[in-house]
Amino acid sequence: MSFNENQKRQYKTLSRATVDSTSLRILNRPVINILNDHLIDYPTPINLNYMWNFGSMAGIFLVVQILTGIFLAMHYTPHVDLAFLSVEHIMRDVNNGWLIRYLHANGASMFFLVVYIHVGRGLYYGSYQKPRGIVWGVGVVILILMMATAFMGYVLPWGQMSFWAATVITNLFSAFPIVGEPIVAWLWGGFSVDNATLNRFFSFHYLLPFLIVGAVIVHIAVLHQNGSNNPLGVSAGVDKIPFYPYFIFKDLFSWVVFFIVYLGFVFFAPNYLGHTDNYIEANPMVTPAHIVPEWYFLPFYAILRSIPHKLGGVIAMFAALLVLLVLPIISTSEVRSSSFRPIHRGIFWLLVFDYLVLGWIGGCAPESPYLEIGQIATVFYFFYFLVILPVLGVLETYLLNYTVED
Image (cartoon, rainbow, N blue to C red):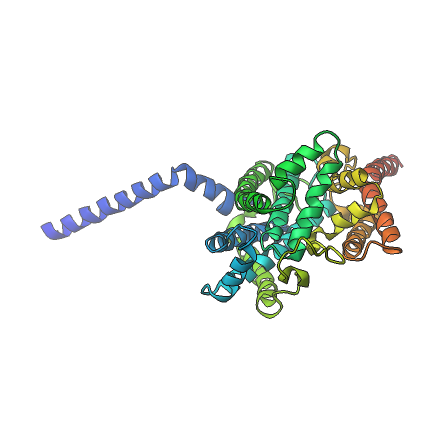
């Protein structure tokens, strides 16, 4: 063997060792290990269906909202005399400003739609039961932060509906004794909804998404600690496969399909999900005939209006969200998945129908018969969580034990 050939072989051996050493150092980095454990080698139940794709899809829309929001903030002016005009400036003068704004506005609706489906899947398959109670609780906190962020963002265009929605919703806190009035004064920054209010809402609207990101990281970390639930609702300690490449491509397919719907709204019906009055500049001297929030708030708005007492309505509206937090505590069923709970399966779809009815009532005028329908739907909503779920779990356990003994 010549000297040159021997030198080449030594060089190749040294190069290979260097590459292996570099790869080992990269794999030993904590960040790489975390990403690998949670996104690549994460053991996933083999029987997950497409309903599990909405969690990752919610993360995608969170990224879309943050990115488009940052670009919009570059051109937006949080001042009562300039806010509406700055939005028009974005739409007309900023390069592709119309696209960024429509992506952001319709992205909020898609974000809520995905999260509502995600929550519905959790209710159907019992994802709030042990050992995933903390995961569920963090998810509910994310939903509440989303609603606060979306409400403050809805005020920023400073249209008629934005202004009066801010006036009505912030006034609700005055119903609380002792602390109510100071809270309203702090939110307003004065004696009415004005420039200080808009500045505060803009600041919070920009800050809260990053808190949501932190909550999402905690949500994923706690979820992966105990593993994902599955359609059967049983322990999947054996039948698991790596998340990549099997489920990442399954998720990718769902993202493409849902983005077709999303971009369909953006390009062909960008204002369909908004209210026409919000394209009129805010005027404190003119009250709209009927104040209507965005569609994703309508069920809770209907619950608020269904209670004739102001404080009772406010408590009911907040309780409609907080009741989700107590599900891991009040749940008595020994079976997670509704696939094996035929009675609950039927009642669950009644809940879905009830939620849609509440959304319809929230957009109707506060008059008969809509008020009465809203009250009935509100009673069923709370009856499902506080009565049906605990009682049905006890009944199912009794029937199961009775069948086994026979």
